[in-house]
Image (cartoon, rainbow, N blue to C red; front, side, top):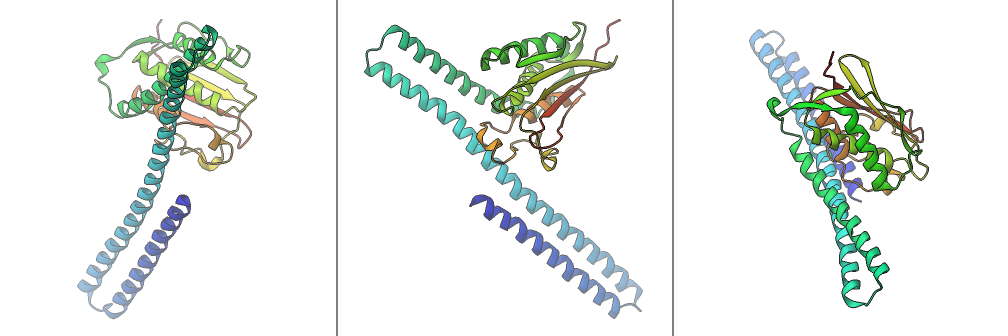
Length: 301
């Protein structure tokens, strides 16, 4: 219902803007017809109506963007609320069970493990929200340092396998990276970007996961980290928007995947902060996708 209302609102503002522009054009033509012999009123009228039309177009675009932005923010709030509420409710349930029943040691340990997993999920959501706020502010270059990027990628793979209980065959390197891949920046932010990219591939790979990671140096000045999955893919009309803040593609497959819509936004923001970029490729829905981070390399002779 909410999407329908917003769609109607967008259509209304577009139609209203088009009608106002058309009315302005009619008035402009009428002005020219009645004052075509008077140079000064004619020129001033054309300039005035041109500015008026431009203002109407800009105002319509602004209104439509604001409606869409509010929609994305509402989706973000709903997603974050769910991501916070679910682990809290789970932890509370297990704590109530532990305090009200006499359980054997094995069962208690299982409950502790589940609560720790829920705590990690809760902490991860909070960290994503905080990181999204941090990456919008440029860091001072004096705080950057040389970072062994290949080591960070290896650590990210191991952490992703451990957290998701994945085998090396499911998440692996296509080609073992060289140890001499150095980039300039903040190592913690690079870890965040790598983990978010891997986590995104795992989430959207469906039940049958097959993720390949490549870390290559196409030239002495560039590092490319590619994460390729054979998952649900990306529709062409979504390709330019998936890196926007709060944005989450909406269809029957992606709706089942929980998230805040901040992961890829953080990835691109970090890459751009350090002189690089992030982009995605996909042949379409059901065809898998490839996400790439490009960073400037510190060449060491």
